[in-house]
Image (cartoon, rainbow, N blue to C red):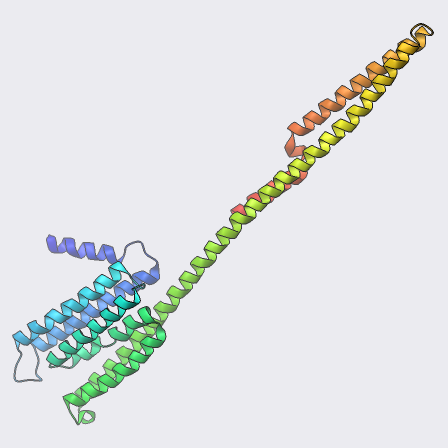
Length: 304
């Protein structure tokens, strides 16, 4: 039950909510190191390169391989692809030392298949150029190791096959590092573009709201001027008609009454203009076409 729980927990960690690029990087790294390490240990248990298998040698090889796997798990869990440079350099050196220990104990040469993990890790910590340079160095190391197995390795089909597979894995793993690295860069670039777009959208929305407020203010000021001009005209007319009524009060009753009627008419007209202006101020949607249009455009931009 405990073993099953650990497997489920590891599977959940590998597949947790992360971008596809990071998930693939995790799964590929862990599976590669685990499978190659298991293969090295298994083949050394049944080795025919020496007089017989040495369990002590196999157990000694198991310790650095477990440490190597622990390093990869630590890096992936804590940093993924963003390991600090100094720590990355120390861990890279640690990987190199561990692999040389395993290689010195390996009686099959299969430990050469673990060499690609060095340039693979370096590609994410120090860039693809560093990974490519280390790939060339480790290709030279593969040739040197193969020559150490047999000075006439080119005449032995098994050793030649070992060298070919190790070289192909080196190329394949570095190609995978390039693909993952470029995908992660594209993801980060897209993330930055989306953040810039969101910031621009918020700024545009703010500008649209300011323009809408300015348009509403300008429209209200225009209506206020219209009210002032219209009401001032009617009040002036009322004042003149009332003065006329007072002037003709004792001389011409008919003219005086007509002046009062005209004053009342001007007052009603003034009241009607005021009501219409107040109604226009209250119904912004119909009387402020610019503000309404700006609000509509702002909503469309938000939906986009």
